[in-house]
Amino acid sequence: MVSACGMVEAAPAANNDFVTVKDSHFVRKGRAYYIAGANFWYGGYLGAANSVGDRARLMKELDNMRALGINNLRVLAVSEKTEMKSAVRPATTSAPGQYDEELLAGLDFLMAEVAKRDMTVVIYLNNFWQWSGGMTQYLNWFEGTPALDPNVTKDYDTYMQKTAGFYRNAAAQTEYRNVIAKIVKRVNTVTGKPYSDDAHILSWQLANEPRPGNGKATPEEKAVYVKWIDEVAGYIHSLDKNHLVSSGSEGLAGSAHDAQLYLDAHRTKNIDYLTYHLWPKNWGWFDSNNPSGSWDNAIGKSRDYLNSHIELAKKLGKPIVLEEFGLDRDGPSFSIKASTRLRDRFYREVFDIIATRAGKGDPIAGFNFWAWGGMGRAANADFWWKPGNDFVGDPPQEEQGLYSVFDSDVSSLLLIKEYADRLHAIKR
Image (tube, rainbow, N blue to C red; front, top):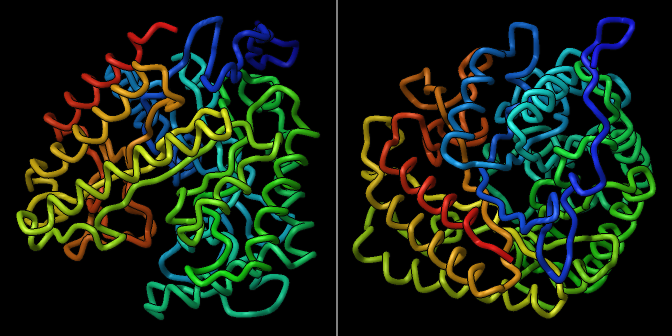
């Protein structure tokens, strides 16, 4: 439809167009809905009409992913301006309440194009890590403390402990809710449709990888974290009755390796499904400089991690999505010319567990690999991102090419398609 002002208006979504949960599984349009997805954090950036964006590239990327059977994207909603060098620029939010409407319109354009391809999107509303400003930038705004950049300090323990102060800061929480309302109540400038009525949003997500602190989080810090998840998820539901809400948790690795904390944080009725992430190299299970010597350990621990979380989901009777995982290129190398033999082997291990257990009726609802690099290419000899470079799957805190899947990684793409087809064939 076209409105009087010439804006393209999407037809109203039928109730069964929204993804819902039934018997610990996703359902859409009356059928089982399994996610074969990609992380595409920069999708809204590509959608911008200004010099940051590249709408032609965005549409081609969406076409390429759709052809592989990818039906879900996990996307960043907003970023916060910061002095930290390892953060993306420009930012959506230059200061509390000050938004770059061209970047927000980029998210609108992305959603309009996603709808044309009948894909769905998970939109996360904050970030525990520094690469988009995130929680540490909120503390910079409202406490006046420096925005901590662990890329500089190399002290992740202190970063995590201090960043968790975000949950306790009343001013930060008020502004965070303002941001949530800004996005959740937004009306798409391309389609004229309120986001709350857009069935191509699968869920709102509190943040990327929220943690209660570091691995030594206290009982009090854990309690604050559990309360924060319940209350913020409830707030989102109060604004939007149509969509699911998820936390963005990494699972046990993001819960101080405390299974009870993970369960407690996701037990609330305000969280509709569970999430978890798998990073064998980041967690010290796999040494890419000694792949043969560390492979068995990495795969054994990865299998246990994948399966144990499905069992935790059973306890809560909710679906669970493996929404991040990755491995670097052979060498190890960041070069697009490097082979992906080990990554492909790792992907197949992961995919096979997910597809097999989904086929048995377990509550695993699918995957989002990290991350779609597509047509993007690293521009600099040191592989570090600078403003004006292509966006790829690796955010500015990491070398460009570390975990990205590019459009030239044929063996990886064929593997993704193989298991996307397998998931989509499951009938329930």
